[in-house]
Image (tube, rainbow, N blue to C red; front, side, top):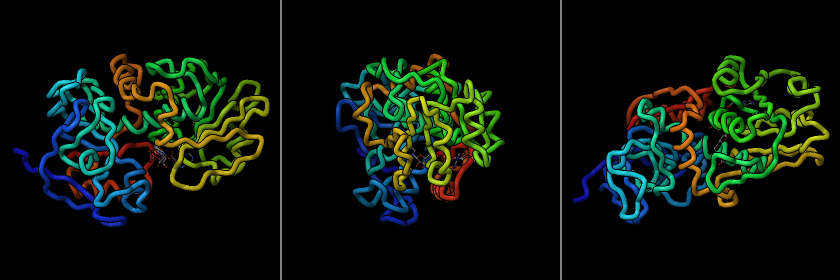
Length: 342
Ligand SMILES: NC(=O)c1ccc[n+]([C@@H]2O[C@H](COP(=O)([O-])OP(=O)(O)OC[C@H]3O[C@@H](n4cnc5c(N)ncnc54)[C@H](OP(=O)(O)O)[C@@H]3O)[C@@H](O)[C@H]2O)c1
């Protein structure tokens, strides 16, 4: 018999979250698992969906893209997981599959085990920023992704890349992934000064530049061999919208790539001489090996090759904590992931 459980939903665009009691979902397809969600990480997309209806087709909406918990049921064809496994997953906002609820159903390919010494709160922060970091490299820069089974093995090998937003969750993931993808690449990043130590000494960037420097393009150029400038810029926070001179950091003789994550705003204009590409979640099918992305995360974690990108800010438990975390996210976070226990 289906037992009742708690789900957190927004009835319509712009409404507050509310807690409702619903029957527990069950696995309907042979490659699905049912997860008892223990923790969810908040992403900017969560409030953009609730407040602006971004990509939402059905209301009420159970939000939530990131989460971690324990497998409670597995479909007949699930091969890699067992009931009781502690896992993180990429969830899909929606009634059965959003992470803002005690039980959610996810496809096996979107599930990964995480290290035994990690908490579910830590593990919940990994999925979306890892996926987006992979897209920044595989679709934005078109670099090889040697750690992704079936992924690109040939491609651009930039000698230097500037990542705008190094203290954002996506930026912190992208720095680590670029180091794995193109080990010799000189990686520069921007952030507020208080995160420079984390970005350089923990995430492994070669140099970090104050995001508010009045000479940012010059500072970035100075940090490249021969002060020639970077081959590519990855903008994960829409910084190019305000920092219009940022393209001056590009090496005029390099690949001149400006790869921007879709933030929900208009595409950023760039000079004609720049090769601009915008990437977003729906572009994922273009990337060879896309079915194995979460599996590759599990392998990197197992081999100690990928670290928790940002410290966790544990906001609390349940509905009030979800509302508080969404409010903090709307206001803007700095170098941390907001997490709520469910
Ligand atoms: N389309 C997609 O598929 C997709 C997927 C994931 C994310 N996104 C979007 O990507 C963006 C980043 O997501 P996230 O989760 O990584 O965000 P986040 O962690 O919430 O971003 C906060 C960080 O952004 C940094 N930042 C803001 N403006 C900056 C600027 N001008 N220069 C440098 N750093 C700046 C802040 O740096 P300091 O605190 O150091 O100042 C802060 O640490 C969001 O807009 C999100 O919606 C899109």
